[in-house]
Image (tube, rainbow, N blue to C red):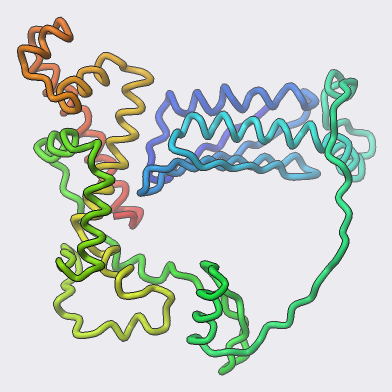
Length: 328
């Protein structure tokens, strides 16, 4: 029996999405003894660059099964993660059973059918070398230089001033990235019309900011107050990254791009008529007369207003949630 804990980051866990996760993960139950209680922790996350990440963790008592996948399709990632979990079980069947017997000598973790099934297991892993690394004392500037030379996004070192281990990361400036995103029906229609070009528009604006041709705009932070950027000296965040991350227009475009992508995927999967209507009107830009002919719908304005109202409500909810979670 599997108990599910499903959490969403930057995405609403709808009933349809929850049902899909549970139906896919239920495939795992066939491998385990019916008395074995499993708790599946599922984390669904959508990033600003439109990618979806699915993480699944299932503690079995003796070992923990874990898999993740990142792709452009949330549902595709769910399928791939479940496949990975199944491969882990099959390839490590003997090891998992042995670990379980060490803790519960009289217990069986797997079902009788799976115990009797012949599977191709992963070969034993041999440890060929272990290595102890002495952390070199250095100051912040040297640590940043070393990190950049290695091409890593983190670097662990011993601070030469107080001899403490430091993990230098880049999350400190999240406060500067907060922006209030305004959701209006006019903007929804405008972004739908330009949806296919949003990637190009975002890259173009970033390029102009980095080249100094335009200055970033921020609703929450008066960038004109900064005469220099000395406060960035002790961070791996450079000036250009900081300015791009605080630009309101880029954040707005990325917000609408991400949210519209999720809504369009949902409509395509579950309400195809609405999805088709949006494609014909905003992507192919059919006139009202041509739209009536293509859809066989007379009240096209009514349908358009209804769909835009649905999107508007969804975006307002997400904008509010995102603001509360410091994602905007």
